[in-house]
Amino acid sequence: MSDTDQKIRLISQLQSTLANHADVMSLLPPNDSIVSKMREIDSMLQEQIASLEHEVAEAESSTSDGGVSTESGQAPHTLDAVPRTPVPATESDDLAGPYGRDLPDRPITSEEMERFRQRPPPLEIVDVQRPMVVSNVRRNGRREPFRSSALNRLVPTPTNTPFLHKPMK
Image 1 (cartoon, rainbow, N blue to C red):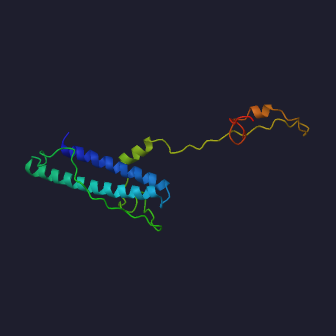
Image 2 (image 1 turned 180 degrees about the vertical axis):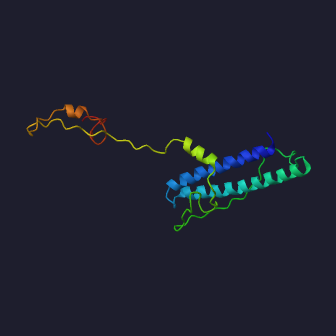
Image 3 (image 1 turned 135 degrees about the vertical axis):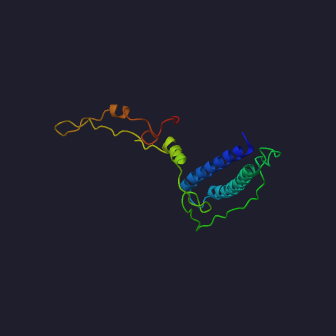
């Protein structure tokens, strides 16, 4: 695999990391400390993506002009150091769109749509406990005496069994 192919793969991995960050940040409150750290990381990732795209464009233009890549002497896994630029989080700071304010809106590709369709849904809403059937009412409307079989049908939860797993005194 050539150096440019590795850089292209790295660019796509960094872009998917940015998309995952956007998903996580949409679930957190905008003033959270984790969100501000993620914004710092996102800005570093964007700078890294931009520099890698620039290097790939230079490599492709040099291979199309001369036919020989000029980066063959360079180690394949070295990346330029990018200075950190912290992104301050203020109270009026709102995320513009799903990717935050630093990324421009871009159309969703068919590959991203396919990947989104393949992932499991985030949460399934399930019933905590099925409703208890009231069976102790006779046909004439009078109630039968209380039977403990109704309790036996209950699934033990902290709400309906407050002293479960607590030692007896």
